[in-house]
Every structure is written in structure tokens, then in C-alpha cells.
Image (cartoon, rainbow, N blue to C red; front, side):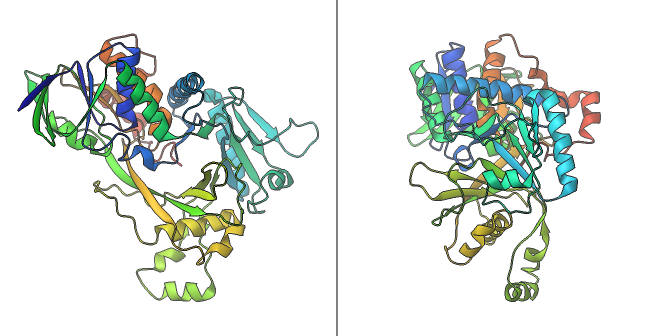
Length: 461
């Protein structure tokens, strides 16, 4: 058995683990940081998302808005120092509805989130005294773009987004949102961490040594055999495997996993503008089928469900640089908890369902149905707590820490999460939102009362 030593061992090299390594090594000055994963960094879940970010988060309270604002601040700093190596933009998110009731709810929600600290709401109703509305620039991350624009003038919606269904009557455009290259962000953080002494070990953590309630070491299976790493600090950053790694130190972590997919398809006719923001159709949707298709689907118990009304939330964004025709689209219409398996298995109808749902929002895509082949389906697992907030901080075993349950917001939360984890490990002054992400929050009777009216879809698209 080989032997090593480290000041901190991080189990998991997804975006959470890599950000933790960066903050521990480059920001907290801890030299012997060892990142352990049996897969290459950022290859399990982190590269399976839309790579988007937003500060547009609902309550209760302003915790998530402040947390995400801090994370975006740090992302902007990194983009500035790296000449925007990871191609961060600020195109925003655009929520759309064709339902007057949803339009009213959209306005109410906008006011509530604005009051939580996400920025002012600007109203555009087609009157000449209203402030000017225009979509965000294609490139760059202008820090002045904050708050949101609420457009309730259908002509104005069609002027700027002519490919969207003319049934859309309201548009909400939060601005401190956009996307970036998660892979390049992760590689940038990893290289900076390595420059400050952090190392990566390819292997599987299979045992954690605990003595008298303290972390003593970690056992890793590598291609060359078993390696024992002597350490007093162990960070669980295992993504969808959070629960199984927690069990190694005798802790039953209150998390579960959902499988989330995305599709990639080409838009050769240029139906969707390549300058489009991330756009979300919020209304429940019945998929567009021909009468012949409907009769065929109705004839089988296995396919009848495809005729039912689906919950809202189908969304998309353009992908790729100049000359690209690729569009990424997602729709989380089935969120049952499940155990992770690799590679993930998606229902065979998923790509078809998403593409047809896109056709409701963007009628110009309907001619593609059945003519562009099967879209590419990919995705990964969201590891979540019941209220969809992360776990970051110390665990009951001395020297054990967690950065996880980052759900579908791992990329956008990564910098603030890594920073917070680093402060916990180094013993620095914590931000005031730190208690909201501790495992110990579940021991608070007042928090338990709040949980009774909370669900795991909070803040999720």
C-alpha cells in the first residue's frame, strides 16, 4: 500500500470539488490540497448542464439571491482576469406565457424577487413614456445589466423575438443571467489551484478512516493499487454519489437524485436567432401531433401519456460559436427520485417530447418533426435536498466537510460555494448566509416549520 499525506482531501472533481480546491489552495493558501476522482475532472455531471447562471431566485428570504449575487461577482472577477477565458455572457433568461393569469403571476413574482435584491423591474406596456426595452448583447457580461424587464406588449415581443409563438402575451427578462463554458471554467480553476500546490489523483475513495470522531485518513483505489492518504480534513464533493460517500463516515445525508436530460439538435433553416437568450415557455403544454399520430398513440397504454398535458418549463438556448446551428433544449417533466447509474438511461421518447414541446413555443420548428433525425440526448443527475438548497460546511465528524446538493445550479453557484467551503475549512470569517447551508439547519425547529411548505422544485426551471 502506498502512503501519501495531504492537508485536505477532496472527494469528487466536479465543479464543486474543483472550485473548493481552487479556493483552498489559491485563496486560503492551503498548499497540500489533494483532489480525488476516478473519472477525469468535470466529466460526470458538471458538463451535462446548460452551463447557465442567474441571480433570479425566489424565497423564502433573500438567501439564494445574495448567495448567487456573490457567486456571479466572483465569476465576473475571474472573467476579467482571464480575458473571459470561459466565454461568460449576459444574455439573460426570458420567461414567456400566453396565459393572462400566468402573466399576472409573472408580474407578482418579478416584484417579489426584485425586493429580495435581484435588481429593479422595468415595465414595458407599449406606451411612449415607458423605458426602452432591448435584448441583451450577444457577447460580454456588462455589469450594468441588472434587474428585469417585464414586457406585456405583444407587438414588442414579436419585434424582438419573431420566432416565438404570437400567442405569447408577456415576457419577463431577468438580466443578471446568461451562460458560460463550464468545462473551460473548471479547467481554469483547476490550473490556478495546481499553480498553488493542489494535485489531482485519479482513483476511487473506498474507505475513510475515522478515529474517536475525527478524520484520520482516506483510502483510495488507483490503477496501481491502494493508496492511504493521511489527512485531518476530508471534503465530500461527490455530486450524485454524495449519499454513499457520507455513509463512509457514518452520516446519512438528507439528499436524493433526479435524472435531468437535455437534447441537442441542429436548426439548419435558422428559425431561432443565434443571438437569443435562454428562453423558457412557462405554460402547461399539449404536444402537437397529427390526427393520425394521436390515434396511434391513443391505441397503446404505453404511449397514451404522450397525449396528456405536460407541465410548463421547456427551455432552450443557442450553443456554439460562429457558424454553429446547434440548439440545446431541456424539459424537466419527470422528477421522480432515483438511484444514479452510469451511463444514465433516458426514456426513448425524451428527445421527441422536448422537440415537440419546443414546437409549441417556436412554431417554426414544427416542420423539422420527423425530418431531422433523432436529437442527441444527454444529461445527468441533480443531487438535491428536499428544499433544493445546497449543503456546505462542517459535518458532525471532526475534520469532515461537505460541498454538495448543488442540484441544477452547480455551475452558477460554484464560486460562492467553493469560497464558503474554503472559509469553513480555513476557519475564516463566514458570510452571513453561511448558516442557511449547514447540515445542522435541519435540527432547528423553526426551519422544520418552514420546510413543511417547501418543496424540492423551489427555484428550479
